Amino acid sequence: MADLRPVLERCLDPESVRWTTVPTGYTEDMARDYLEQIIEPSAEQISWAIEADGQYAGTIDLRSGGGEGEHASGDVGYVTHPRFRGRGIMTAAVTLAVDHAFDVLGWELLVWQANIGNVASYKPMWRNGFPRPLSVPALLNHRGVMRDGWHSVLEPGMPREPQGRWEDVSAALLRDVEQARRPG
Image (cartoon, rainbow, N blue to C red):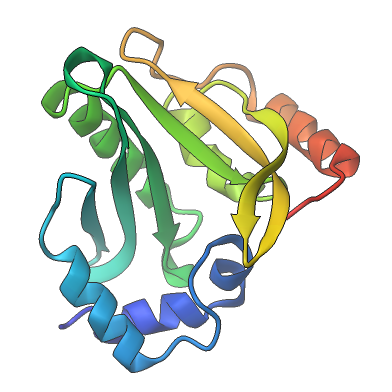
C-alpha cells in the first residue's frame, strides 16, 4: 500500500477530476479499494502502476473490448500523477502497453478515447503512432453527461511514430474543441 497516498493525491488533482471518471470526493478508503482491485489482472482488464524516480507516477490499463482470437481488441486508458506530467513517462508506458496488447495479447487493434479538449492525453498516443483522433459527437458519458469525444485506433502494422508535427496536430485538436457542441 505504498502507493496509497500518491493515488489519493492523483485522484484529488483538479485536472484528473476534470478529464477522468475518478469519483468526486475521493477518499483514502476509495484509494485503498482501488489498489486492492487492480492488483490482480483479469480477462477484462490489466492495470500497471507506473514508477519514476522510485515513486508512483501513474497508472495505465488495457481493457478488453471483446472479440476472440485474432479478432480480440481493447482500449488503453491512463492517468499521470501531477508531479510527473510533461516528462515523457506516460509515452514510455503507452509504448509498453501497446507492445503488450499486440505482442502478448494478440489484439488486432487498440482504441484510445478521451473527452474533446484533453489535448495532453493525446500526446503520448501521437508519439506512439495513433492517428489524429476523430471527433465524435456525444461519444462519452462523463459524470452523467454525454460529451463529445476523440477516438483513435492503432493496428499492429501501422507506423509506431508520430504522424505529423505536434504543432500542426495540436492546432487541429484545438479547432475540434472550438467546434465541439458538447466539449469535455
